[in-house]
Amino acid sequence: MYDFPWWLRAEHFLNIIFVTFFIRSGIEILGTFPRLHTNVHTPAGKQWAEFTIKSMPKHKYYAVGAEYEDYSPIISLPGRGLLGQGRYWHFIVVMGYVSCFVIYYILLFATGQWGRYIPPSLAAFPEAAHNMVSYLAFQVPDHMPGYPFNAAQQLAYAFAIFVLPPFMIFTGMFQSPAVNTHWPKITKALGGRQMIRSLHWWGLIAYLGFIVGHVTMVLIHGYGSEVSKMVFGHSDQPLAGGIIFTIGLVLVVFLHIWATRTSLERPRSVEKLNNIIVRPLTRQLMKLPSRQQLDPDNVTEHFRASGCPPQTDEYKAMVVHDYEDFVLEVGGLVERPMRLSVADLRELAAGYEQTTMHNCVQGFSSIGTWGGLPLPALLELARPLPGATDVVFLCFQNMGRDDAIYPEGWYYESCPLMEANQPQTLVATSLNGESIPVRNGAPLRIRQEISTGFRSAKWVERIEVVGRYDIIGKGRGGWFEDFDSYDRMQMI
Ligand SMILES: Nc1nc2c(c(=O)[nH]1)N[C@H]1C(S)=C(S)[C@@H](COP(=O)(O)O)O[C@H]1N2
Ligand SMILES: [Mo]
Image (cartoon, rainbow, N blue to C red; front, side, top):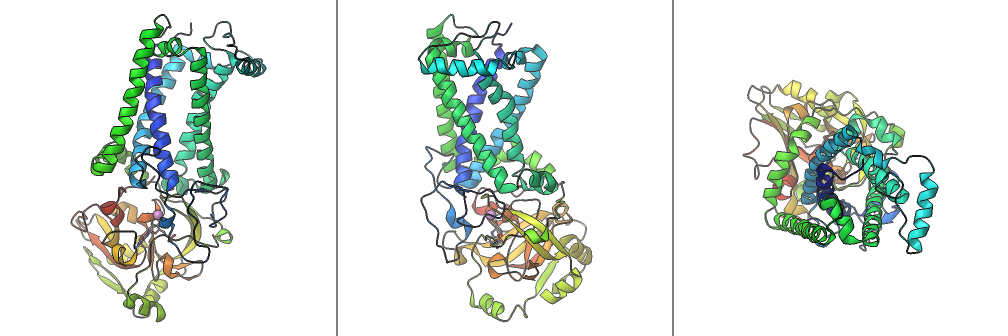
C-alpha cells in the first residue's frame, strides 16, 4: 500500500533544492548579526552563542553594521556579507517551499500515504531505540511489517515532515516585523523576537542533524537501491537509479553556483525575481497595523544603534544648542506646507507615546518608548493634494561622508501613503521620556513600526509628500534600496 508515487518523488527532489537554499541563505542572514540571544533586549556581549571571531570594542560606540560577518560564498548564499541578497533567496524559496508543501500535504492525506509516517503504536518509540542500537552494531534493522521503513526511520521522517516545517515557518514568520507587531501577544508568548530567532536556529540544527542521519542511513542501506526508490519508485534497477539521482544532485550543485554568481554579479536580477515572487505578499502585509502596547517598564537599557550620526560642524553645533534652531520642513504635494520646531511638534503631539519593538533586518531588536506626533496626524494638518502617493523622509546624514563603510549618498526613505497612515507610524521626538540621543536620530526620526529597521529614517530634516518617488536618489525609494539589495516593501 505504501509505495513511492511520482508526486512524492518530485517533492523529495524539490525539497533537496529548497532546504539547501534555506540553509545557505539562512547562514548569510545569521552572519549579519552573528550572535544569538535569549532576551529581546540583546545587551551587547550577553549572547549565548556567537558565530564570529571579531571582537567588538567594549567602551566605544560602534554601529551594528560593524558586526557583519562576511562568510565565504562556498558556505553562505551569496556570501561576502550581502544580507539583502541572502534575504531575497530565503524568501523566494519560502514561497516555493510553502506552495509545494501545501500540495504535498493535500496529496499525502488524500491518498492515505500519510499513514506511513505515523507509528502504528507507541511501541514504535522503544523499537526505534532498538533500531539505533542495531545500526551502531552495523546491522541493518528490518522494516516494520506493512511499512516501507523501520521504526527509527519512520519517526525521523514524521519529525522532518510534520514537525520541523511548520516549526520553521512559524518561527520564521514571527521574525517579520509586520507579523510580530500585529500579534505582539504571540510574540511575547514565544519568548520575544530574540528567543524566536534562537528557536529558528535550533530548527536549522535539527535540519542539519536530520540530513546527516538521513544520508548516513541511505549509505548504510545501500545508495543505489535507496535512491532508486526516489527515482523510479522501486529498487529494481539500483545502478540506473543511482546514476540518475547522482546527476540530479550535481544539478542541484550547479543551481547553487548559478544563484551565488547571479547574486554577486547581477544582484538586480535577483531583486526582480523577488519583486515578482515575494512582493505581492509583503505588499499585503503593509495592511497589518502594529498593535503593540508593550510595557514601558520593559524598555531596553542599551538601545543598539545602526549607522553613524552626521559628522558636520552644523549638526554638532545644533546638538550643542539643543536643536533650538532646528526646523522640520513639511512640504511637497500638500495644501499647507509647514515649518515646525521640535517644541511645535511636541505641542502638537500632546504627550503621545508608544512602546514598541524595533526589528532590524540584521536581526537585533530593542524596545523603546517613543514620543512624538503620529504621521497620520501630521499629514492631516498638511493635507496631501490629489495625486499624492508617497511620503519621503530626507535626512541630514550622508552615508558616504559620515560612515566609512558605505559609498556616497544622502540617507532617505519613503513609504506609500497607506503605510504612512498606519496608527503607529510616528515622527518621534523623544525616546524613553527624554530627547532622542544623537545615535538614535536626534532631533527627530521616523518610527515605521510594521517594517524592518532601515525604513525608520533617523536625523530627519524634511518630510515631503510626492506623486512619484522614482525620481529621487537612484529611484528605488530609499538609500538602502538604492545601494544595497533591500526591498522598499520589506515587511518581512
Ligand atoms: N539616516 C539614517 N537612518 C537610519 C539608518 C542610517 O544609517 N541612517 N539606519 C537604519 C537602520 S538599518 C536601523 S536598524 C535603524 C536603527 O535605529 P536605532 O539606531 O535607533 O536602533 O535606523 C535606520 N535609520
Ligand atoms: Mo537595520
